[in-house]
Length: 459
Image (cartoon, rainbow, N blue to C red; front, side, top):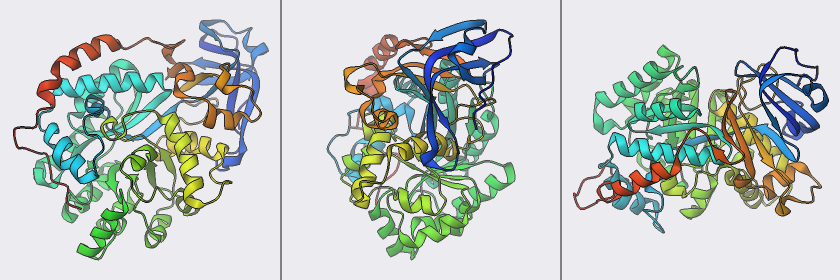
């Protein structure tokens, strides 16, 4: 329950006043999201000190004060699975099935990646996410020390893992572990880390088992692609007699804190295994990409919820999704679930907001720190302007946020009490400078005449 008492009289680092605040009256009930009118947020020492009334907050001295009339304060969005550096490849592989997308374009191009390419792609992605109200992202890619340095500099929160394939030999898994141990807790605690095997179709059972052992030994979570689509599940059953989820279970990964990307190939026989994990396994859904690749199924959110599995919202990388817009992912999740279930009563706007906030925070292992605006939580929040004609009139504020508001309506983004964007102005990144250098590097980055590729997709 959000405390309503007045804040202390000492100077605050930041006071946001006059807004409507999204509050979670009961964290485990997606229908108990509420809105407190004419409210205020008081931030001290990087955390929310109070959620109070605008009248009470007027008496609080503050280093920074934001008047937010006509705006809604809500927990910052979390991109639960992306590949930020792939913003550099946006629009490169269009109108292709997944096999050609990987084998003919993306995996050949990724052999060209340098640390600077990764840095520029990540800088561009972070700018896009900050402008779209994202305060935290979970990433799973190469050159992750570079990604971590960008996160530290721009002020976002991130959950990072160095991806590895079994084709790299033991050094790939060792590098993933080394990164996770060195970087966890970096950037004043804004960076958390995970082991990051790519997928069951690129990582052997022995390596998956070793990863599970390392996760338990070092207290690390694991972030992996699995059961991305139904074809992968069918192929896995034909080859091994096991679904991808059963492969993870046999390796011991369902006994770790596991984040599964996509899961549109999760089937009925997988659900008892996932339920047994007691919520330690989460799934990230990125619906725009599933539409783009014309996959026949989407993440079975309703069945996963019944099994106690948190489902967070995601975009995947911009090379497959063209966008890092988690706001759109929230809208599409609600709409696609209605279609998939044949039930307009599911997924409701309040349930969608629950996935965007509480469940996304749980998915990346930060359920006790972010996802809720309450005293003692990290001051990660956004202010959304609802004064535009496309958001008026407001009959149901939850529905307005999910189905009428857009990422471009985010006016201000705050992470750890630091204002990263105010009135649509980015304060920690220079987009023109980033794009200028990235554009110069594109011919070398996108060359495919060398005949190399990172892997081969054959599922």
